[in-house]
Length: 310
Image (cartoon, rainbow, N blue to C red; front, side, top):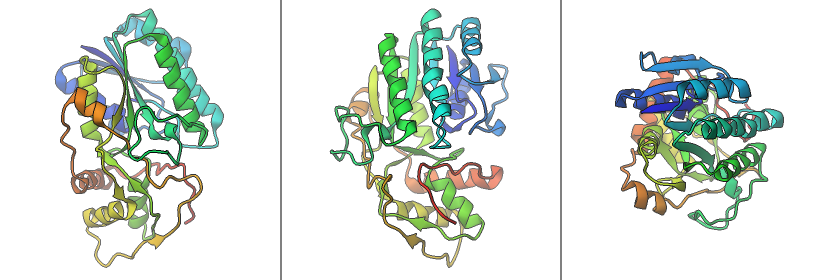
């Protein structure tokens, strides 16, 4: 099988590349290193990596025309600066249109996409949130642009699977509380937590579903979620344990900020029906693997849509 992967140096994309190579697939990947890292680029005769942006229409058309993939796995996204709307539009919307156009022109058999749970807004009306919940993308530039990109994919008529994601964590994770906790604890800085709850799922578990989707499992939108959530303080405690810190300070407790959600828990029933029962990796194992990665490769990013003070 021939697979084209965008965001190939990022957390999800690089793990997809590794799994595809291990399966014996031929892979082409693209990344502009906005949030990806060169240490994530696999060395393999089955893999051709290209540094570039999916917003570059001519480059995308040429790569897909030359490679003619069976499957396109689109993990690339702009998200690191919530105020940089132009980059969000350029990458998340223009990039998607470029990929869809090239996929249609070259008869790509399947398109796999990844969506943020923020398309349901920061205060969804259901818990857990169903796939039928109204979309409310006006909470951030990121969710607006990601939502529009999915609309273009649906409009294209391509055979597709969209995974609407819980919080994907583990090795190579550069966004959200996990890398932030690790970085601040490493620097001797105090952390803070809010009453928020989140569903943290291991990146390797998601990639197994992506590999199934690449072989034809499913169609349309799915929630990739364990169906349960944990308090942010529980994640903090697991990071402390994995780092082996004794007599660690209790984190500061803060109220939720206006742009934060108490909980966004997704209903995964359709996913389980089509992809089978998923054995989710326990949180302590997920965190331990992430910390081991940070200790070897360091932390970059710590990106979040929330603003915090040192």
